[in-house]
Image 1 (cartoon, one colour):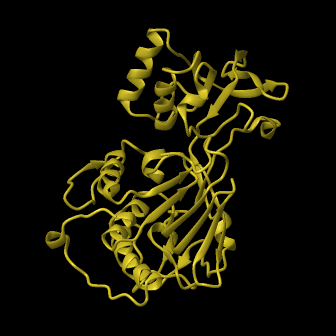
Image 2: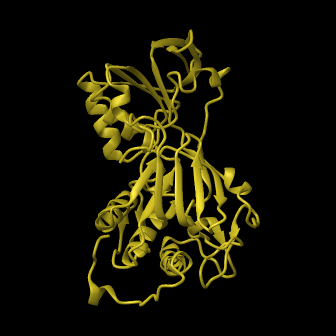
Image 3: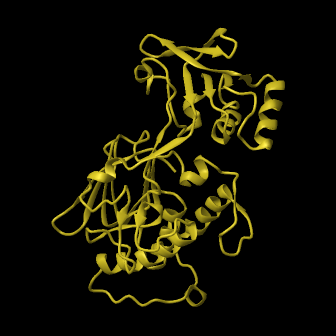
Length: 346
């Protein structure tokens, strides 16, 4: 899976039946429900990989309320959903934020990301969870100067950092997981954490310590980012130890991985009703105040709403039926059980 802009001559123009904004579990399951109705889907997410919060915040957290699974790890659920939707061959634009959503005179929609990728769709399903996730940034003077010039808040392609001198700051699952993975491609890798106790899975901490003993990474605890140095591009990172000592590390890449914070973002300006940072929908179609635009999962609100993945799956099923009728009003929709029809890709 690649971003629509990734060495293929700039931003692309994509045509699909349903554009799903958000590639978390509910957005992924919506692909399955749409696929059963022969609707092609394309997903857009600001995060660099599918899975939403499950993959980025708590990939190894057990989930107990998925039918048929007494317990399943968050990332395992995402992986299973990806396998489930594979026959329908969805498209993905990852690492890009939708900036504009415009209804066209013919009733279709134009979706434009901040990188200029353009998607033409018959219907839109907003499955953006709690909104557009933005990285929590460290309190460092003039940090914006180095953004995109060695300072990154997400990893979209590990190869981008091959042979680099990489400093990762953070102590959660994301920081540990990327430190482990990037240690295989970086020239040097240093993991900096403000505490001696990590908030990541014990296995990840153990793996990182093993890599440190092999000389493949350095782990500095009880310290935090203090200053970024460079002329036009990051060249070094200053860290401040808890005892006040300042240490300078050579680095052309710095990844502060302190988690993500949800914000409604551009969604608030797309022309439909918003209530308390949520999108009101009906419970027949899960349609917003704009016909053809639907909202499913944690982003929506209605009487009796429960913020459960299970409920989002139910909403995705009804949304797909309504999207079909919106896109193909002249066609008869005949609902059939998958136990009878099986699963057939597009």
